[in-house]
Length: 186
Image (cartoon, rainbow, N blue to C red; front, top):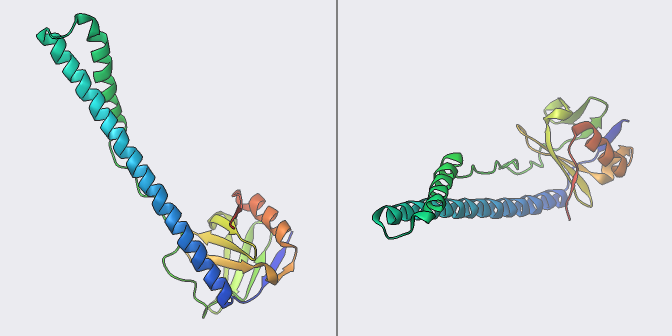
């Protein structure tokens, strides 16, 4: 199936992208904060498990505890040491695939053509042809599609500009070609 999108970006499209970008950045920061707090909690529990194992071994060796607690102390010590060695580093920062720059309205996409195997779009600088494997994420809201790439600014496709096919057909086409599920944004 072939899709053609012809439409210029408006100020409303740019504002919608900024709202979406800001919302995604807040969500990414919250997730990063949860990951770090979870990692700190894991480290604290590992430290406590190791310390309690060492303390129990010391108490058994000095005669303050019964020898029957020895297996429990050894298990606590071994588990604490093993878990320290399994995950030593802080969680890596989540990569932000949203571009830092704004979408330039002075260089909008004039047309985009989506066919089997590859797609092309034309802007002021000329024609750009890419494969679907270059798309790292696809989002959709009520009025537009957002195609994100690893090495270039996102491509905004207003639904009002579809000349070939419908937005619903385009969504299923993108999911089939990219292997990504189109994430619907409210």
